[in-house]
Image 1 (spheres, one colour):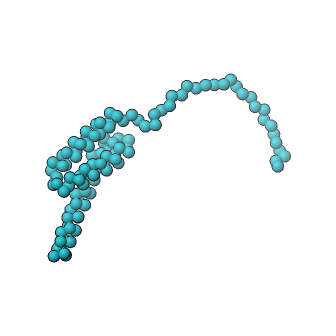
Image 2 (cartoon, rainbow, N blue to C red):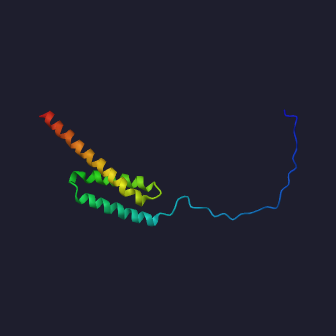
Image 3 (cartoon, rainbow, N blue to C red):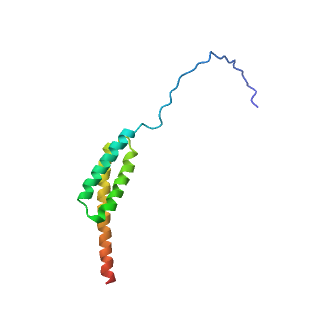
Length: 110
């Protein structure tokens, strides 16, 4: 054992109390949420009007994916339009690729 023990006298002062107000764990986003949904719906409708029927589901999925990613950022209203455009481009490319594969499959089967 340690033979060099040195005792330090302790002194306690008067008890001090603080008034603490807990901060919310996340900012209140109810107003942002409604604006965000309006923006999402407006951009989605603009894309659906000019899209072919086979792009309906992929565009809706792209909007939902972009919304989920944008909502995780600090400024979802600013980030969403860019993410939505990127997701739309990827969805259109995917649908075109699937159409090519299906057409090739039909040629091979014939």
